[in-house]
Each structure stands twice: as C-alpha cells, then as structure tokens.
Image 1 (tube, rainbow, N blue to C red):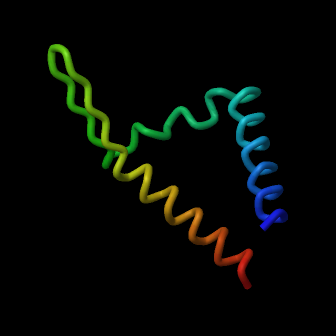
Image 2: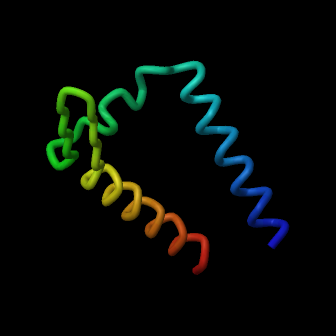
Image 3: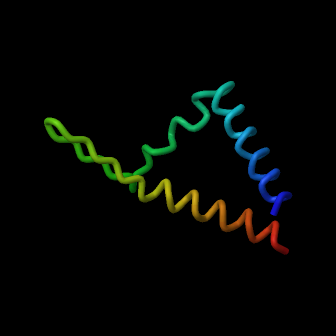
Length: 68
C-alpha cells in the first residue's frame, strides 16, 4: 500500500507541475460537447459528464496496465 501511495503522490506532483508551468494545456477540459452548463440569474450548475467519462476510461486503462 505504501508503494501505491508514493506512486499516487508522484502522479499528483507531476500533474500539478504541468498545470503550473503550462496552464493552457488542459484548457479544453470541461468544455467538451457532453459537459452540461446551466446558468440562471443567480445560479450556475455545471455537470461534466463527458469529462468524467474520459477520466474514467484513462484511469481504467492505467490501472489495468499496472495490475498486469
């Protein structure tokens, strides 16, 4: 379990560094055709359906590669 926590920490540091040094890299994320946005006078609702499906697929592929 300690090894997985270290790997997860390194991945989070790498993602944080990428977002810090290249902020426009993931500018498209959250603006995909299946992400729903509803805006009223006082309310904003954002439901990132397509973005979460992409994250789920990528994480599934990565975890399957590590578990083999």
